[in-house]
View (cartoon, rainbow, N blue to C red):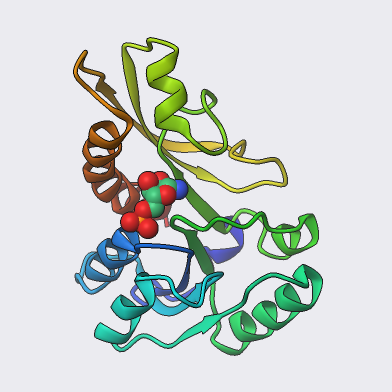
Length: 197
Ligand code: GRF
């Protein structure tokens, strides 16, 4: 984040949100970014899925979007980097984005890519987190906002919310409850990283 310090105090940081699915975090970030206090402004949506529901949300809020299927990752990432540069994007928020970005891509945006993951990282990286958490009889789960580095779900943690797992919880009920907290901590994490600037 240090490189961003020099920018004007009250101008918002242009942000791209990367999605693959429903986009509830996307909508939440868009709504947040419309508030005066928000340090970011969502101006671009990138989807790895042409049928992602989240694209309807991009349309609803009039935010330009591009879809890339990542069949040729190198080529697609090159094109994405072009759009990010063209739109003066300073921050990338991954929100239910199901592709793994290359080391080269991450290097180009080093320290400026955030992700949200529905577990108490470093526990339960990767997919099917809720199934695995419940199967292991964990008492707690939660969600984590972290910086993205070249290892999956492993970058520095910015903010985490811990919640209790109930005996009656299924992966579905747990996912639903955690998602509500995701919508609270993602904006909070953004406020946190910009609070010193
Ligand atoms: C969220 O639980 C997020 O943490 C995970 O995928 C889900 C995406 O939900 N990586 P949505 O598309 O933001 O509704």
